[in-house]
Length: 111
Image (spheres, helix red, strand yellow):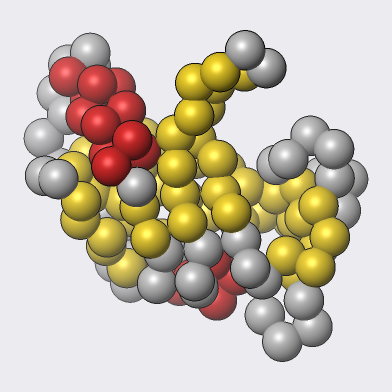
């Protein structure tokens, strides 16, 4: 499925701790149509839905719907905080091309 780094888990824990009523919530990572290259990543705090794959890391959960799972197989979710910006980032081996913004990609034909 998707590999989640310790930094990503730590940041999600920080986000959940800052919210009220976070029981059962985690980070939904999904692929949507749109963006410069045809597909883009969306991430939201959400609850598990029927059919979701769940990746647990350091006591927090990441949810991936069935349609997005094939695009994210073998990908790594990280959180980076640097001079050029901070946020969750995905390194995806299924992306044959990405745009400059880093959130939009074109999938390889097998994905």
